[in-house]
Image 1 (cartoon, rainbow, N blue to C red):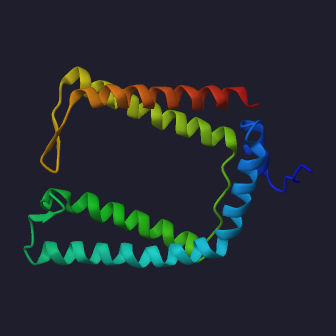
Image 2: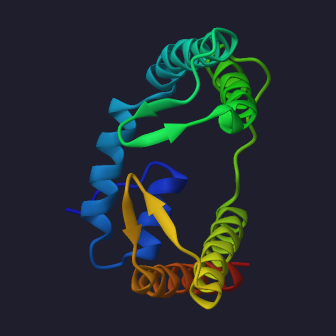
Length: 172
């Protein structure tokens, strides 16, 4: 007996993966029932509190001369204060917007989503490729990231960009 498909997202899974579509559709249905909008909205409210605490702690550290800060092998200086505050404020506004039903969030069509994802992956591929040709050194937590890792990043990001854009252009 074949399962009935109840939503557009189930239809997308079945159409995209014809052999494993039934299993994927069942798993997607279970995930949707566990993570309904009410649960996600409550998580957004909880996350907004954490983001507000991060914003206030960054301001407190800056005003009390707490820079530079060493955390998990990273050294944070005063140079990261403004980007952190801007990111925290933007994330806070997005979480408040979703958590407390302020306005409506428009649904993104499948083709638009794939075009955006393909573009982002394309930018990441170009950034990796630019690092390879520039020979830029990246050090994360005291570890020098080898250049060959950017070749792998270029290959993966370029493939994901190609696949996303190809699929987006095949959808009418």
